[in-house]
Length: 188
Ligand SMILES: [Fe+2]
Ligand SMILES: [Fe+2]
Image 1 (cartoon, protein in one colour):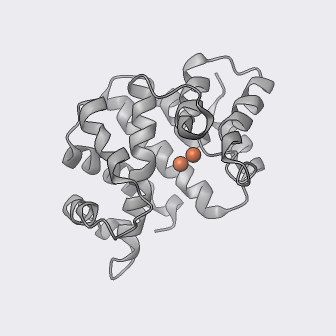
Image 2 (cartoon, protein in one colour):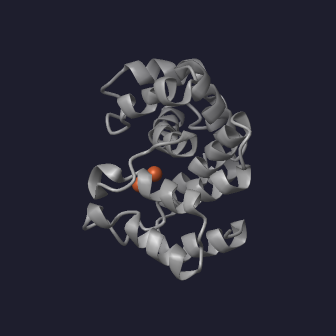
Image 3 (spheres, rainbow, N blue to C red):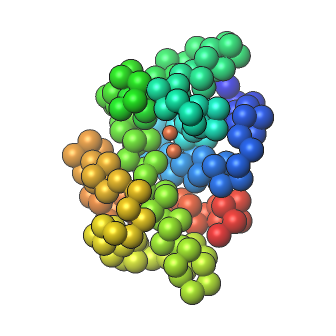
């Protein structure tokens, strides 16, 4: 399995937008916590989170290529772990038609991907614009306010209840604290 340093080098060789790299770091941090919750491999789930959007810039003009480029880069590096390859593909099944989420790892990525964006948006409207000022209650309030950060798909986040068996409030708390633990890297 690709190690964290190799994954980081791959990610940063393919992404130039700092906010996209930060998004990948946020998803990595949440995925590691979710792995611990499910008693799975935090290293593996973290790699999936870190790399899930690594081809975003190079597939921007054609969303049907998003995740397929990363899949190709990883297999080119002799990555063979089926869980990693499948999970990365699964989060863009809506555009590629490949590998719809089918297990806890894949549903975790699918649900937390959108939530990390909502949490960043909530931090940015805090008086000090800091993640440390955000509370789960503040995120919950903005979750119900559909016009706020409308691009963060609420129905995708809310699937945590049905697909992961985690209450929305708890999913928000876990994700927020994971992101707060790396706030210097996230720059907020
Ligand atoms: Fe993506
Ligand atoms: Fe993403």
